[in-house]
Length: 392
Image 1 (cartoon, rainbow, N blue to C red):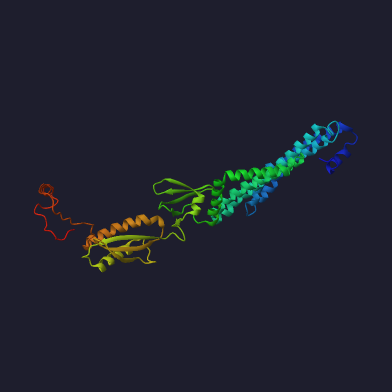
Image 2 (image 1 turned 180 degrees about the vertical axis):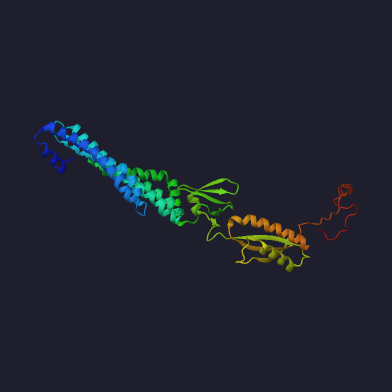
């Protein structure tokens, strides 16, 4: 601390009638007492003047910042006053030019820098809390909830790094060489943690692109479906329908084909596949299917349901009914209710739902085996069909 600052000059003039070490000791004691008083004054000003005024304003930003910086600011003021006091002792005999004097001056300088850094961190933390409580709550953006805390932590690291750099420079330590060494070490760590960093960048991509969000229902490439439980920096967690938590690295999620059933809206298509016998009136069967879909309260009228005759099966005429529901969470319950209603309506209308069956004709089997089969009731006992007859 230079001895020619206005504070030092004023104290020197007031106590010029004292000499040397005695004068500096008296002035130092007075500065320490003033440091305590000034710190208490700052806290009193914050509590009794600024905070009551801030509570009358429509915004919470000033209240949050004042509450967060009250204690760190008073400590920074206190350490600054102590630094001024220690600076006087360090430039006067017997400490002038001594190793202890330089260490004393450097220690109090480091305390001032640390207190100032803590004040900046407290202000950044208060700003983050205000943003999450006021702005992010109104926007309801998952991006804010994911990124703001990360940015806050990075800002804290930057503030402390700058503070450490200032202290090291004060002690004449080569900061450039230290930063270069840290850069080389960071490169080595980055190469060793390539997979982790890849997942982190993929996590940032997911958060920014918002291809899926927490709560969305997605389908993975292997057909697994579930709801997004959490999107972290390293992995995405999916809660399956079996209540199992599936953890997938973010880089795999970014590189995979993911089906998001929540986008662009919550509507989802429900398909009902059913087969009717060849003897059925196909138009009547289609009409029954359509009426069943329209009668369900959760089936949307727009877009309207549709029934289609898709193909001729081995044992049935295959029909496909397509309808839409408002919320994808109702998909399986609606499908269950529609299947049940279709079965009941078909039973009422006498429409048969066939099942696959095959007639088997046996030829040229030993008599003892034919008897055993006949006794088992599989086929009637009797001669085998003549050669050349149709076989099934």
